[in-house]
Amino acid sequence: MESLLPYIPGEQPRDASFIKLNTNENPYGASPLALEAIRSAASDDLRLYPDPAGASLKRAIATRMNLTMDHVFIGNGSDEVLAHAFNAFFRGKGAVLLADIIYSFYRTYCSLYELPFRQIALDERFRCNPEDYCGACGVVVIANPNAPTGIAMSLRDIEQILLQNRDVVVLVDEAYVDFGAQSAIELVPTHENLLVTQTFSKSRSLAGLRVGFAVGQPHLIEALERIKNSFNCYPLGRLALEGAVAAWADQGWFDKTRRQVMVDRDRMTGRLRAQGFDVLPSSANFVCVTHNAILAGDLNAGLRLRGIVVRHFDQARIGNWLRISIGAQDQCDRLLEATESIVEACAGW
Ligand SMILES: *Cc1c(COP(=O)(O)O)cnc(C)c1O
Image (cartoon, rainbow, N blue to C red; front, side, top):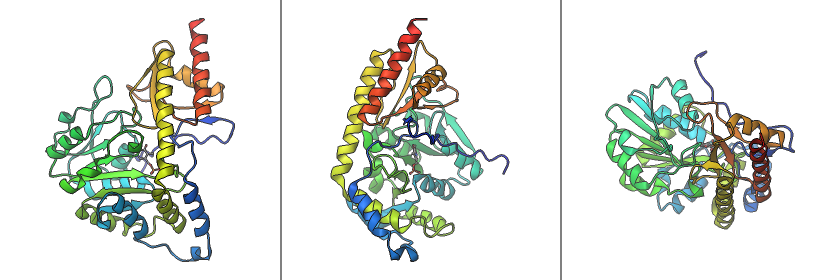
């Protein structure tokens, strides 16, 4: 167990005066209807166990996707769903093929379940070439859009990877898909090797509730259920189930808030580029940036001095990049003022 390398989550500063743009949380609260549902679920019924199958939530998700309930698996955040998927589908299947720059929790799951993995280099602009994921000796995990780059893959490229790896499960993590990428869920009916995960943490502002789900053909969902029921029959409590069902139903709130995030992302991208930043094209609720005149470490320190926390990954290839979550409009403005003053201060040296 000493060799286990746990995932290190982004900092949650105690000082609430910090502008927190480091963990891709949504600046707009959850749907008021979801909060109301959670409040009403805080009742005497909490002495009873929740529905172990979470049927109400599965039904809601399946209906929206034009699928049946047996195509949906739900879990305590998509991290848990991903962990069960690694456990269910990747043991004894050769190496797990991962981009070299990707959500680092996947490497943690490989370490937890003792799975070999192989890193596939993204190109110089951090794009993924589907040709590099030719199966035979491995299983595939894709994040679309990718994290921490924000770069999305086309559905055509995803389909190419599915066709190249028909005998193994291809896992597509769509944690950020609602901010501008195309979901692969529409490929589920025609591809028996596809499992797609999504989360309520980002686009539905419920990171604190812990709800995630997977969509795939029933044989895959059944395997996940077997693992789940051998581990924890009740990963979602009554509050989480009620809140998630109500959040899922409130399409108006979902669209309004995610659109605002996308508008602010595009505005931030333009303004940061005007300040001399290289900003990767993002389809997520964050931007990944570097500056040709200032080291990311210095920029990170300068932002912190100005009360803004962003994410700096001390990792090869992206060590000189920062990932900045899209906050509310005034937080974006504060960020842009801060970067401007840092850039100006550097130019004066
Ligand atoms: C945030 C995130 C998750 C996990 O989300 P939870 O549902 O909160 O566990 C999974 N994958 C990626 C790429 C993420 O950024």
